Image 1 (tube, rainbow, N blue to C red):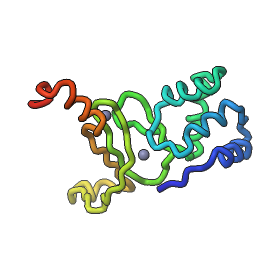
Image 2: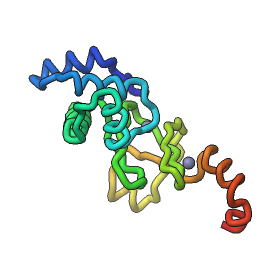
Image 3: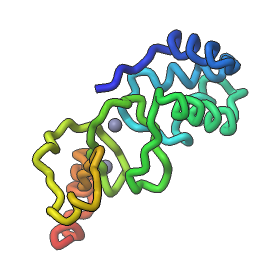
Image 4: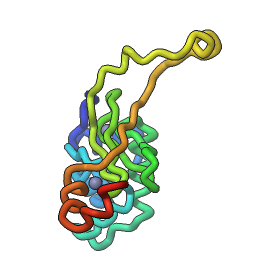
Amino acid sequence: MGEVRSPAELTELFREQGLRVTPQRQCIFRLLEGNDRHPTAEWVYQQARSQMPTMSLKTVYQTLNDLAAMGEIQALDVGTGSARFDPNVGHHHHLVCDRCGGTQDVEVDASALKLGRRQRRDFTVTSAEIVFRGVCRTCSQASNETDMEDEAYA
Ligand SMILES: [Zn+2]
Ligand SMILES: [Zn+2]
């Protein structure tokens, strides 16, 4: 698991890189700390704006991109429509809900996965990320309550 830096450490790091640290950026750092929901930029923007009405979407994108460029968060495309940002920069895998796009970390042992002989000859694998797709508990409970018969043969 990657270590998630505290807002104070991120502030320090930004200053070392000669980047400006504004109260808006610090607000974004706080929102990311310990955040394991893999937020989209839009989610961060909405949360940040409710705390700081002066927040702009541009600042959110800029800050997330700076953090990603510094390797403090990773930008993730798990096929849910928008990029998601993961403060867990350690190597790990994901569970992705097809209905709500909810994304969770999962630790699996992927060392048993092997390419065929031909691919192994022509390609050097350095890493593999696994995405398990399915339906999260919240969505499966919601569908049980509303459209049970629609789902029966899905
Ligand atoms: Zn879901
Ligand atoms: Zn993750």
